[in-house]
Image (tube, rainbow, N blue to C red; front, side, top):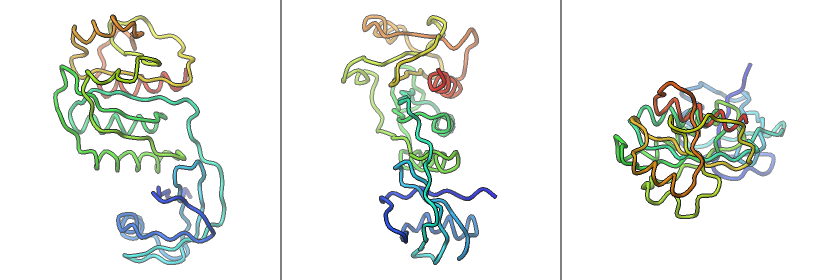
Length: 227
């Protein structure tokens, strides 16, 4: 039977782990119906899974004894997904699946054709934590506040790749750290494409069909991770 995994914000150390986060305790006690004697996996983003036995589980506190420590998977390739803000449900779906694929960071971008201008960052952060818990990752990707298109390249253009149907056919991407740019529904504007061209940023295509933005984000992330 597969054990439930829970991400703990505090660094884990010692034989006994104490949890006071009422959201985690509620999930354990009321959602998964865990009880004393049940085993769980706790992780803190350090790349280790701590298999633990439940010693105490109440609304206010949980105590867990570490029984085994093992390595957890953290992707070696660092892929940052710069995704134009799209409809809430679609952005959340793309973020969840991008975590499963292996991205290390998600950056919401307001581009010219973005349909929405805001995101519930707290909810998105929670979704990404849950995705890491469920898929077995040893870390949780970063999510940063929304930035405008004009600020994407404030730190330079190194390692950026644009995904757009007008680009060249994608080939193996062998660089270890990649920042991928995926546009909104309707694609990048002509002005944005001109900026990519002026900055000599590589533009590649995922094929001849027009993909939904959330689909393109996940496919692009997967292609880069596996290349």
